Length: 314
Image (cartoon, rainbow, N blue to C red):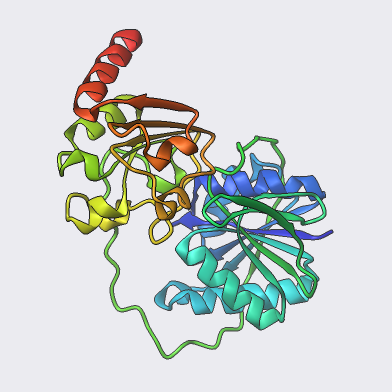
Protein backbone atom coordinates (compact mmCIF):
# COMPACT_ATOMS: atom_id res chain seq x y z
CA UNK A 1 0.00 0.00 0.00
CA UNK A 2 1.24 3.46 -0.90
CA UNK A 3 -0.88 5.96 0.98
CA UNK A 4 -0.71 9.67 0.21
CA UNK A 5 -2.29 12.41 2.34
CA UNK A 6 -3.21 15.80 0.93
CA UNK A 7 -2.19 18.29 3.63
CA UNK A 8 -4.61 21.15 4.06
CA UNK A 9 -2.79 24.30 5.15
CA UNK A 10 -2.91 28.06 5.35
CA UNK A 11 0.38 29.59 4.20
CA UNK A 12 2.32 26.55 5.36
CA UNK A 13 0.50 26.17 8.70
CA UNK A 14 -1.31 22.82 8.68
CA UNK A 15 -4.84 22.39 9.98
CA UNK A 16 -6.01 20.01 12.70
CA UNK A 17 -7.53 17.80 10.02
CA UNK A 18 -4.06 17.08 8.61
CA UNK A 19 -3.08 15.33 11.84
CA UNK A 20 -6.26 13.26 11.76
CA UNK A 21 -5.63 12.07 8.19
CA UNK A 22 -1.99 11.22 8.90
CA UNK A 23 -3.13 9.20 11.92
CA UNK A 24 -5.54 7.22 9.73
CA UNK A 25 -2.97 6.78 6.96
CA UNK A 26 -0.42 5.22 9.34
CA UNK A 27 -2.66 2.16 9.66
CA UNK A 28 -1.69 1.13 6.14
CA UNK A 29 2.06 1.51 6.69
CA UNK A 30 4.15 3.98 4.73
CA UNK A 31 2.70 7.49 4.52
CA UNK A 32 3.58 10.27 2.11
CA UNK A 33 2.33 13.74 3.00
CA UNK A 34 1.76 16.08 0.06
CA UNK A 35 1.51 19.83 0.45
CA UNK A 36 0.66 22.07 -2.51
CA UNK A 37 1.55 25.75 -2.42
CA UNK A 38 4.10 28.42 -3.10
CA UNK A 39 7.87 28.03 -2.50
CA UNK A 40 8.61 27.67 1.21
CA UNK A 41 5.25 26.21 2.29
CA UNK A 42 6.69 22.69 2.55
CA UNK A 43 9.52 23.79 4.84
CA UNK A 44 7.09 25.71 7.04
CA UNK A 45 4.85 22.67 7.48
CA UNK A 46 7.59 20.03 7.86
CA UNK A 47 7.87 20.03 11.67
CA UNK A 48 4.10 19.76 12.17
CA UNK A 49 3.79 16.99 9.58
CA UNK A 50 6.70 15.05 11.09
CA UNK A 51 5.00 15.08 14.48
CA UNK A 52 2.33 12.77 13.05
CA UNK A 53 4.63 10.10 11.67
CA UNK A 54 4.96 10.86 7.95
CA UNK A 55 7.56 8.74 6.18
CA UNK A 56 8.00 11.25 3.40
CA UNK A 57 7.00 14.83 2.64
CA UNK A 58 6.56 16.04 -0.92
CA UNK A 59 6.00 19.73 -1.54
CA UNK A 60 4.52 20.66 -4.90
CA UNK A 61 5.57 24.29 -5.14
CA UNK A 62 5.02 26.94 -7.78
CA UNK A 63 4.96 30.70 -7.36
CA UNK A 64 1.76 30.98 -9.40
CA UNK A 65 -0.22 28.00 -8.11
CA UNK A 66 -2.28 30.11 -5.69
CA UNK A 67 -3.23 32.48 -8.50
CA UNK A 68 -5.54 29.82 -9.93
CA UNK A 69 -8.54 27.90 -8.58
CA UNK A 70 -8.32 24.36 -7.21
CA UNK A 71 -8.07 22.91 -10.72
CA UNK A 72 -4.36 23.65 -10.88
CA UNK A 73 -3.65 22.02 -7.51
CA UNK A 74 -5.62 18.96 -8.63
CA UNK A 75 -3.67 18.80 -11.88
CA UNK A 76 -0.33 18.80 -10.07
CA UNK A 77 -1.53 16.31 -7.46
CA UNK A 78 -2.91 13.88 -10.04
CA UNK A 79 0.34 13.91 -12.01
CA UNK A 80 2.31 13.19 -8.84
CA UNK A 81 0.08 10.27 -7.79
CA UNK A 82 0.39 8.61 -11.18
CA UNK A 83 4.16 9.11 -11.23
CA UNK A 84 4.65 7.68 -7.74
CA UNK A 85 2.23 4.77 -8.14
CA UNK A 86 -0.05 5.78 -5.26
CA UNK A 87 -2.72 3.30 -4.19
CA UNK A 88 -4.67 5.54 -1.78
CA UNK A 89 -5.21 9.27 -1.37
CA UNK A 90 -6.82 10.78 1.74
CA UNK A 91 -8.20 14.31 1.51
CA UNK A 92 -10.11 16.46 4.06
CA UNK A 93 -13.85 16.38 3.37
CA UNK A 94 -14.16 20.14 3.07
CA UNK A 95 -15.63 22.07 0.13
CA UNK A 96 -12.16 22.62 -1.37
CA UNK A 97 -11.02 19.11 -0.49
CA UNK A 98 -13.97 17.47 -2.23
CA UNK A 99 -13.50 19.61 -5.31
CA UNK A 100 -9.83 18.62 -5.57
CA UNK A 101 -10.68 14.97 -4.90
CA UNK A 102 -13.25 14.90 -7.69
CA UNK A 103 -10.88 16.52 -10.16
CA UNK A 104 -8.06 14.12 -9.24
CA UNK A 105 -10.43 11.16 -9.65
CA UNK A 106 -11.30 12.25 -13.18
CA UNK A 107 -7.67 12.89 -14.13
CA UNK A 108 -6.48 9.53 -12.79
CA UNK A 109 -9.57 7.55 -13.91
CA UNK A 110 -10.12 6.46 -10.33
CA UNK A 111 -13.03 5.82 -7.99
CA UNK A 112 -13.90 8.24 -5.21
CA UNK A 113 -15.61 7.94 -1.81
CA UNK A 114 -16.69 11.10 0.00
CA UNK A 115 -17.49 11.96 3.62
CA UNK A 116 -15.94 8.84 5.15
CA UNK A 117 -15.92 8.71 8.94
CA UNK A 118 -13.26 5.99 9.09
CA UNK A 119 -10.79 4.21 6.81
CA UNK A 120 -9.17 0.83 7.51
CA UNK A 121 -5.67 -0.31 6.63
CA UNK A 122 -6.92 -1.85 3.37
CA UNK A 123 -8.68 1.41 2.37
CA UNK A 124 -12.18 0.24 3.25
CA UNK A 125 -14.17 3.38 4.00
CA UNK A 126 -17.01 3.72 6.49
CA UNK A 127 -19.75 6.23 5.67
CA UNK A 128 -22.77 7.43 7.61
CA UNK A 129 -25.53 7.89 5.01
CA UNK A 130 -29.22 8.77 4.66
CA UNK A 131 -29.08 11.31 7.44
CA UNK A 132 -27.18 8.96 9.72
CA UNK A 133 -29.81 6.21 9.51
CA UNK A 134 -27.42 3.73 7.87
CA UNK A 135 -23.72 2.86 7.89
CA UNK A 136 -22.01 1.44 4.82
CA UNK A 137 -18.55 0.04 4.17
CA UNK A 138 -17.14 0.44 0.68
CA UNK A 139 -13.95 0.17 -1.36
CA UNK A 140 -12.80 1.77 -4.59
CA UNK A 141 -12.61 -0.89 -7.29
CA UNK A 142 -10.69 1.00 -9.97
CA UNK A 143 -7.55 3.11 -9.96
CA UNK A 144 -6.40 5.00 -6.88
CA UNK A 145 -8.66 4.85 -3.83
CA UNK A 146 -9.51 8.53 -3.40
CA UNK A 147 -11.27 9.10 -0.08
CA UNK A 148 -12.37 12.33 1.59
CA UNK A 149 -12.62 12.10 5.38
CA UNK A 150 -14.82 14.22 7.64
CA UNK A 151 -12.94 16.40 10.13
CA UNK A 152 -13.09 15.16 13.74
CA UNK A 153 -13.65 11.56 12.66
CA UNK A 154 -10.61 10.35 14.62
CA UNK A 155 -8.43 11.72 17.38
CA UNK A 156 -5.04 12.76 15.96
CA UNK A 157 -2.21 10.75 17.54
CA UNK A 158 1.31 12.13 17.50
CA UNK A 159 4.20 9.92 16.41
CA UNK A 160 7.40 11.92 15.92
CA UNK A 161 9.40 11.22 12.79
CA UNK A 162 12.11 12.94 10.81
CA UNK A 163 12.10 13.18 7.04
CA UNK A 164 13.31 15.66 4.51
CA UNK A 165 11.06 17.68 2.24
CA UNK A 166 11.25 16.75 -1.43
CA UNK A 167 10.34 19.83 -3.45
CA UNK A 168 8.79 19.31 -6.88
CA UNK A 169 8.24 22.03 -9.47
CA UNK A 170 5.18 20.88 -11.41
CA UNK A 171 4.52 21.27 -15.11
CA UNK A 172 1.32 23.27 -15.03
CA UNK A 173 -1.20 24.16 -17.67
CA UNK A 174 -2.61 27.41 -16.28
CA UNK A 175 -6.37 27.63 -16.34
CA UNK A 176 -8.27 30.37 -18.12
CA UNK A 177 -9.57 31.55 -14.76
CA UNK A 178 -7.22 33.60 -12.60
CA UNK A 179 -7.87 34.67 -9.02
CA UNK A 180 -7.52 38.43 -8.97
CA UNK A 181 -8.13 39.06 -5.28
CA UNK A 182 -8.49 37.20 -2.00
CA UNK A 183 -10.13 38.41 1.17
CA UNK A 184 -9.60 36.26 4.30
CA UNK A 185 -12.77 35.22 6.07
CA UNK A 186 -13.48 37.26 9.16
CA UNK A 187 -12.82 35.15 12.21
CA UNK A 188 -13.71 35.73 15.81
CA UNK A 189 -12.31 34.10 18.89
CA UNK A 190 -14.25 30.86 18.43
CA UNK A 191 -12.86 27.75 16.72
CA UNK A 192 -13.74 26.88 13.13
CA UNK A 193 -17.08 25.07 12.99
CA UNK A 194 -16.04 21.87 11.20
CA UNK A 195 -12.90 21.40 13.32
CA UNK A 196 -14.31 22.31 16.75
CA UNK A 197 -14.31 19.69 19.51
CA UNK A 198 -17.51 21.19 20.91
CA UNK A 199 -20.38 22.78 18.97
CA UNK A 200 -23.35 24.61 20.48
CA UNK A 201 -26.13 25.18 17.94
CA UNK A 202 -29.32 27.19 18.01
CA UNK A 203 -32.49 26.79 16.01
CA UNK A 204 -36.00 28.09 15.62
CA UNK A 205 -36.48 27.95 19.38
CA UNK A 206 -34.05 30.83 19.89
CA UNK A 207 -36.52 33.23 18.24
CA UNK A 208 -33.48 35.01 16.87
CA UNK A 209 -31.76 35.52 20.22
CA UNK A 210 -28.49 33.59 20.13
CA UNK A 211 -27.06 35.30 23.25
CA UNK A 212 -27.57 32.27 25.58
CA UNK A 213 -26.15 29.94 22.90
CA UNK A 214 -23.08 32.12 22.40
CA UNK A 215 -22.54 32.53 26.15
CA UNK A 216 -22.41 28.76 26.67
CA UNK A 217 -20.22 28.29 23.59
CA UNK A 218 -17.70 30.88 24.78
CA UNK A 219 -17.55 29.30 28.23
CA UNK A 220 -16.85 25.88 26.70
CA UNK A 221 -14.46 27.17 24.03
CA UNK A 222 -16.92 25.89 21.44
CA UNK A 223 -18.01 26.86 17.95
CA UNK A 224 -21.52 28.16 17.32
CA UNK A 225 -23.76 26.43 14.80
CA UNK A 226 -27.29 27.05 13.59
CA UNK A 227 -30.13 25.17 11.96
CA UNK A 228 -31.36 26.02 8.48
CA UNK A 229 -34.49 27.59 9.97
CA UNK A 230 -32.32 30.01 11.95
CA UNK A 231 -30.06 30.94 9.04
CA UNK A 232 -32.94 31.27 6.57
CA UNK A 233 -34.64 33.64 9.01
CA UNK A 234 -31.51 35.78 9.03
CA UNK A 235 -30.83 35.16 12.70
CA UNK A 236 -27.33 33.75 12.13
CA UNK A 237 -24.91 33.70 9.16
CA UNK A 238 -25.36 30.91 6.61
CA UNK A 239 -21.68 30.03 7.08
CA UNK A 240 -22.67 28.57 10.46
CA UNK A 241 -25.45 26.32 9.15
CA UNK A 242 -25.17 22.68 10.18
CA UNK A 243 -27.00 20.14 8.07
CA UNK A 244 -27.41 18.48 4.72
CA UNK A 245 -27.30 21.82 2.89
CA UNK A 246 -24.80 23.33 5.31
CA UNK A 247 -21.70 22.03 7.06
CA UNK A 248 -21.15 18.53 8.41
CA UNK A 249 -19.66 18.38 11.90
CA UNK A 250 -18.47 15.48 14.07
CA UNK A 251 -17.42 17.08 17.37
CA UNK A 252 -16.86 15.28 20.65
CA UNK A 253 -19.88 17.15 22.04
CA UNK A 254 -22.82 18.64 20.14
CA UNK A 255 -25.42 20.69 22.02
CA UNK A 256 -28.64 21.40 20.10
CA UNK A 257 -30.67 24.26 21.55
CA UNK A 258 -34.20 24.83 20.31
CA UNK A 259 -33.65 22.60 17.27
CA UNK A 260 -36.46 20.21 16.36
CA UNK A 261 -34.14 17.77 14.62
CA UNK A 262 -35.38 17.51 11.04
CA UNK A 263 -33.59 14.85 9.01
CA UNK A 264 -31.69 17.54 7.07
CA UNK A 265 -30.13 18.86 10.28
CA UNK A 266 -29.39 15.44 11.71
CA UNK A 267 -27.52 14.54 8.51
CA UNK A 268 -24.95 17.17 9.42
CA UNK A 269 -24.35 16.30 13.07
CA UNK A 270 -25.45 12.75 13.80
CA UNK A 271 -21.89 11.38 13.84
CA UNK A 272 -21.05 13.58 16.85
CA UNK A 273 -19.61 11.54 19.72
CA UNK A 274 -22.04 12.86 22.38
CA UNK A 275 -25.27 14.71 21.56
CA UNK A 276 -27.22 16.83 24.03
CA UNK A 277 -30.56 18.41 23.11
CA UNK A 278 -32.66 21.10 24.80
CA UNK A 279 -36.21 21.49 23.48
CA UNK A 280 -39.63 22.36 24.87
CA UNK A 281 -41.30 19.67 22.78
CA UNK A 282 -40.81 16.19 24.29
CA UNK A 283 -41.76 14.69 20.91
CA UNK A 284 -39.10 16.59 18.96
CA UNK A 285 -37.25 14.26 16.54
CA UNK A 286 -33.89 15.48 17.88
CA UNK A 287 -34.42 13.36 21.00
CA UNK A 288 -34.27 10.22 18.85
CA UNK A 289 -30.53 10.67 18.36
CA UNK A 290 -29.47 12.29 21.64
CA UNK A 291 -27.41 10.82 24.44
CA UNK A 292 -28.85 13.33 26.90
CA UNK A 293 -32.08 15.28 26.49
CA UNK A 294 -33.54 18.17 28.44
CA UNK A 295 -37.22 19.02 27.97
CA UNK A 296 -37.45 22.70 28.73
CA UNK A 297 -37.14 26.28 27.54
CA UNK A 298 -33.60 26.99 26.37
CA UNK A 299 -33.86 30.51 27.83
CA UNK A 300 -34.30 28.93 31.25
CA UNK A 301 -31.98 25.95 30.83
CA UNK A 302 -28.95 27.53 29.16
CA UNK A 303 -28.36 30.33 31.71
CA UNK A 304 -28.51 27.77 34.53
CA UNK A 305 -26.14 25.43 32.71
CA UNK A 306 -23.75 28.25 31.92
CA UNK A 307 -23.78 29.45 35.54
CA UNK A 308 -23.21 25.95 36.91
CA UNK A 309 -20.36 25.20 34.50
CA UNK A 310 -18.72 28.56 35.26
CA UNK A 311 -18.91 27.78 38.99
CA UNK A 312 -17.30 24.36 38.46
CA UNK A 313 -14.55 25.85 36.31
CA UNK A 314 -13.94 28.61 38.82
